[in-house]
Image 1 (cartoon, rainbow, N blue to C red):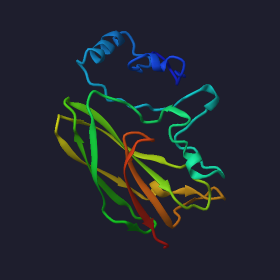
Image 2 (image 1 turned 180 degrees about the horizontal axis):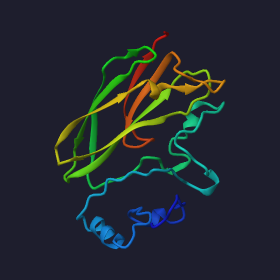
Image 3 (image 1 turned 45 degrees about the vertical axis):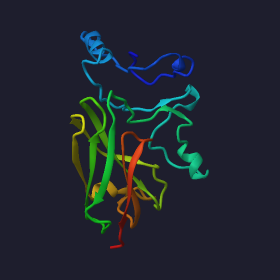
Length: 211
């Protein structure tokens, strides 16, 4: 697909073996596409937008705010998006494990270090873009169901594993209150590690204590 935005594919998606999103690749686009199709290059890119199932679902964002409906319906897992924000395939597979937080309780103004293991479990060398999201479980104002805070692209040989480390600071937990003033509120957050906004592989809770 050579497009500059998301497109709907419901009418024909089931009739093809794969979809290669190349955006506007320029003069060398044909060579790059051929390299991917013939296996000379293993793709590892991720979508910077969400592809909806139909135009009636537009606009559709990964970090939408919840409504008064039940959370199961708010999250709409796989119901509205065709391909979620951060999604992308390659010719290999990866396994996520061993999520650890340097501490599970912090005070406003403090940070936390997050680490986990990523392993290439397939037969080909490949790149994976690991993504860290946070979910504010309780806030004084409505917050998005998840917000991307960190990401990193890693290249791994077959069977190779690496430890990935992220650090979150006070600014990552700051929200705007009802008076539009920046504030860090006490409460619980979920730390989510995934390969896309919809494919979360690891989860841990972090508590921000009262000052």
